[in-house]
Length: 269
Image (cartoon, rainbow, N blue to C red; front, side, top):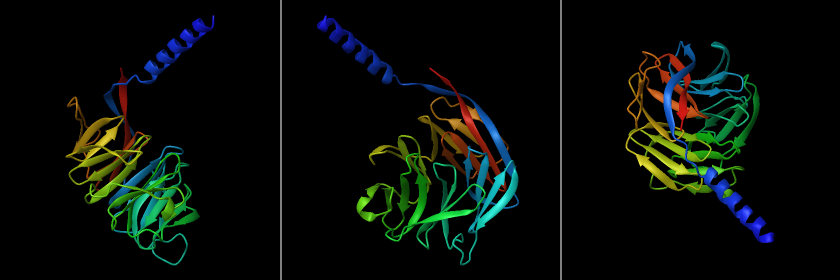
């Protein structure tokens, strides 16, 4: 009887492992536009909180971050000054796991956290960093910060140097964007995309800047988004896109005075 139970458990475990290891194949069938916003200024970067449909838009060549809800500007934060909420040299913006705004000030070496309405919450000291330049935050509240002087990605939860996890040295060249998914860290360079796992090991280096969603690669050229493996093209707008980002499956495209937010709809095999 014991042997029968043992055999049953082994079979059950094997079946469970087989199901766990099934690789899903995602085929994009549609690009669904969530919202578009026409702006009176040129955006440097936009992030989107799906919690309450809030846009945080960094105005190019300024320290200003504009907050939009339902397509309407509700507030503007940052700017120069002596208040805790002011910025000296804004170098990146990101979303916290709770959907609030994080602004990286590379001159003051700190990250300022604002709520979704733009109210100052707190700041995180980065004085042990050299030149913090790019920022992304994982769902487990691990901060990934690219230090331009060290030319490395620093992963930390408490910002204490002794607890840093560092990777990417001698592999990264002049990145302009940093993104974190559930199991990957993406580094965007002008002509390449680097993909690391959460252990800091490089998995792929592509000789083009790609959007990566559900392990599917997309190039953005002009007003066209092209799925690399199938060649399928999506044209959500006539705008010419000059930058892109992705967070939790939400794709943000920026053009001159224009923002478009959308997502891919997939057929799963």
